[in-house]
Length: 486
Image (cartoon, rainbow, N blue to C red; front, side, top):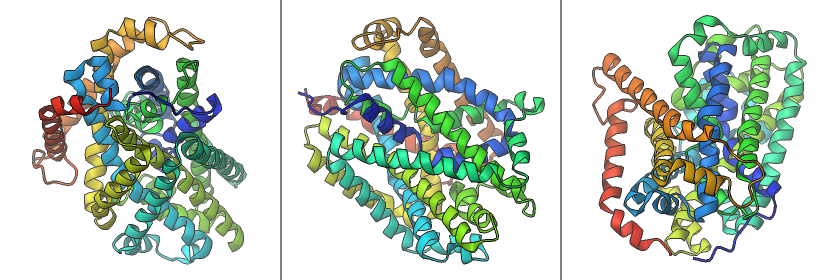
């Protein structure tokens, strides 16, 4: 297979890969998780896990994509051996399953932006009712289609003319909008109280193991590490591109955006002292929507005494959220498209197939919030296994050999030391074992129905759906290898 598509420059690669990492999780999920885990106390383990989980896996994904020129299935097969191609298939499936319902989330963002600009979003008196009426109607299906159509049209145009150009607009605009909102937020009365909460650690939370586990999960969500998305974009890296510098820019750039979003939201929440801020901000609501789609419109409605100014800030916030969602959805769709390309499809046929499948399989999540919640739970936790499989492939290949020959190979400006061997070989597997063990033990201890595969959010539904997918891919492993384009 001769590879012909490449990002036009390092800036094109970086801005597109940042589009993967910077998503709705940086804006709504990060602030909610911080509030639920002690404010500033959460930031300490969050930064630590950036260094011992996210960055090593980002480096691994860049190296796998650049060296193999395959998506997750081919990359794992070439690195770990053909009998482990099923692991790559699982990684690809997890991100594809997330794509099905993430398109629905993207549609929600677009709907609220449209409503803020042209509709009556800030005229509502009950935002929970407004959300419930919208989410229980057929409207999410329409906006799900719009989101899929926009991203499919972008990917259809290719890597440079589609993905790269779109991300230059989306990510750059998103960053500008977030800094405009940041400036407004920190100039609100009483905003300093929000900053104190956000940056002041408390020892009782630092010593709570649940805070550390939530920090690991959030960092994986924040950066996109272990999803296979960065691996997919790395397929389009030029040979002379450095892996370690690019990975560092993605990791630290993404976490910086999370901090900007956190400062903005906490400053705004604490500035509105008439609202029960901390009680509201920690509520996840149906499918983790509470903060963004139920509570934040109320915040913007009270940000000033000028209705036009309130509408302006609400509009640009939901525009930023829409841009963040679209840039991430593009990467999810590209991963699945790349997988079909690896099996011999051309780009145009692949993206049309992906768009059609993505829309159809996203319909249940668009119409049923409980189904959405289940899929978000199952495949969100499944990302831990995806990260474990990437680490396993490198261990199977030989961690030191991988570091010396691939990471520090052609195009390397900064050499990665032997510390990387320790993290991939020992720390990543240990984190996976501890996190999954804690999760299973907690499920058994607190949920008498934990093994029921038909519950919305429990261990049983995860184990059942993971098991079905893994068994199918193991049985198809030989055919998967036969179909991969040489």
